[in-house]
Image 1 (cartoon, rainbow, N blue to C red):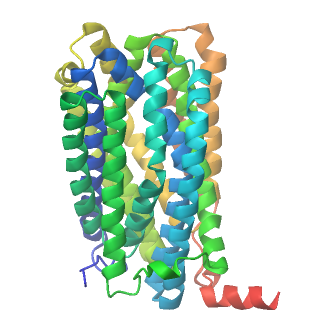
Image 2 (image 1 turned 120 degrees about the vertical axis):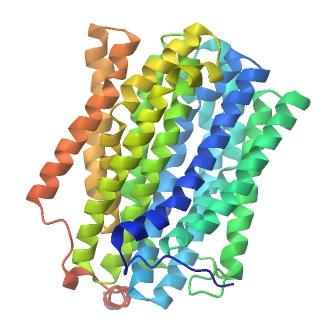
Length: 461
C-alpha cells in the first residue's frame, strides 16, 4: 500500500510544516479528548472523589511512561535522518530495532507500574479517600503498556517518513472506542474507575494493532516484518543516544509535575479535582504546540540527513512563528471561556475556582512553553538531545522543585504555588536563547555520518 508522504526536504517550508503538523494536531486533540472524556464521565457518573482519583494519576503515569516515549522519539529521529538520506538498509534495521525496544520497554513498564503505583501515590501525599481508586486505575493502565508503546513507536516511524495522516486515523478509531467504552463500563455496567482504565487499555490495543498492520502491509522501504523484529546494534545505539536523554528529559518534567501534584494534594480533594480538570483543558493547547515541536524535530532530522543545513535553520525559525500563533491563539480562546469550561467539568463552585486559577497562571504564558518545545525538538532532530535534557533538569525540574520546597513555604497558597510554571518557562527560554547564540549547534555537512561508516568502524574496533 502506497501513501503520499510529506517530503520535508523540499518545497515551501512553512506550508510543509503546517501540512505535516495538522494531522499531528488532530491526533493529539483526539488523544486529549479521550483523556478528558475519562475525567468528565467519571466526574458525572461517579463523583468528585473518583474524578480526583483519576486526575491524581496523571503526573505519575506521565513520569513512568515518559522515559519510554522518549526512546520512541530517539528512534523516530534516526528513522527521519535515514529516510532523508535514502538509506534503505539502515531504515530497515532501525524500524525493526524500534519495535524490539518498544516490546522490551512495555514489559518493563508493566511490571514497574504494577508494583510501584501504590507506594508512589502514598509518597505523593495522595488523599486517603481517593488512594484506593487511584491505585486501581494506575495498575490497570500500566497493564496496557505494551500496546501503548507499540502504537507510539509505530506512529513515530510513520511520522518520521512524512506520514502524519495514518496515525491520526488510527487514533480517531481508538478515541471513539475509548469514549464509547467509558460510557458502557461506567454508566451502564457501573465498574467505576476500573471501567475507565480498562476502556483506555482496550483503546490502546486497537491503536497498536492498526499501526502494526499498516507498517506490515506497506510496500515502502520502512515495511515491518514481524519475524525480523530484533535489536541491531549500530542503529539501535544511535537511537538510544538520542532517546535516553529525551526520555530522561520527559521524566524530569513529569517528576517536577509530580512534586507540584504533591503540593496540590496538600490543599485537599477539591483542589486535586480542580487541578486535574484544568490540566485536561490546558492539555488541548499543549497538544498543538507538541505537534509543531514534533514537526520541527522531523523536519530537522530529514533535512540534516539530506545535508540541507540552511533549510533546517530556516525551518526552525518558521516553526517558532507557527507555534506562537497557534498556542497563543488557543490559549487566549480557553482563557476567555474559562468559566463555562470549568463548570462543564464540575459545577461545584469550589472546584471551578481551582480550575480557573490554574488556567490563568499557565495558559497566559503558554506560548513561551511552545517556543521551548520547538527549540528542544529541533535540537533532538539534529542529534543534540543532551542539551534540552540539561536545560530541563536545571530550568524546569530543578527550579520547580526549588520553588515547592524552598519558596512555597514562605507563602503556602495555591496561587503562589502555580507561579512555578510561568517562571520556569521564562527561565528556560532565556537559557535556550543564550545557548543558541553562543554555540554553533547545527552540524556541519561532513559531521553527518552514514550508518555504514559507523558499522565499519565498530567492525574494525
